[in-house]
Image (tube, rainbow, N blue to C red; front, side, top):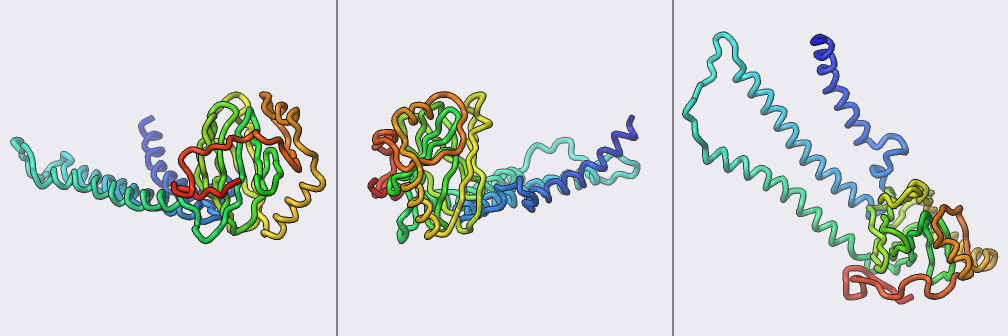
Length: 291
């Protein structure tokens, strides 16, 4: 048994290194967090890399220190390591032990705070596409105030245009997450919270809820299709002319607990999304264009 444990312990380190390398490389479509397709996601990936680098330095330092300690102070014939039984403390060592963690925290915190505040504001030279997002049980309702259309469980956005998602919930609290475009934000009943994202490359991106909200939570997935602005305009115009209107009865059916397929509507009833936002206006952290 001891021999087998020894063999596995020798394999553990290379297996850990290989696994970490695969995760860091982002190989495979399942590692979408490490495959940014917009400015927000790229900034957040940079923060992940900065944090991982700092943690890697700490882990490497601890492992090297551990190896040096084991080799230097292990008990063996002819051991010449100094024996200091009355050693009580070292001001220099205490300073180092406190200074290193403080420097690491500062190294991580400064860019994190800078990027957090920077991503809280839309680019001043661009007018965003506004999408009102409502999380339901267990589906997503997306309303386009300017275009006057609505979709269920899918989003179409123009490439290169910032998108301001206004998030609320008509269900338990949830989270809205498109990993390749940026981090997640909560959707809460009675509140409207902002999330700015942007796609710089045409394609279809995966989105979902990242907050457990009941037995149908696993079905709260949606797709985001990024397309050239001209194609987006044609898509919106096509919905206005071919898709059915959403009636109040349709809206109440969406509010009912259950899953839903992808749907499109050429219009939706007024008053189905809150008119007051919380904490983001032209003078606040986010740019908000009047509906």
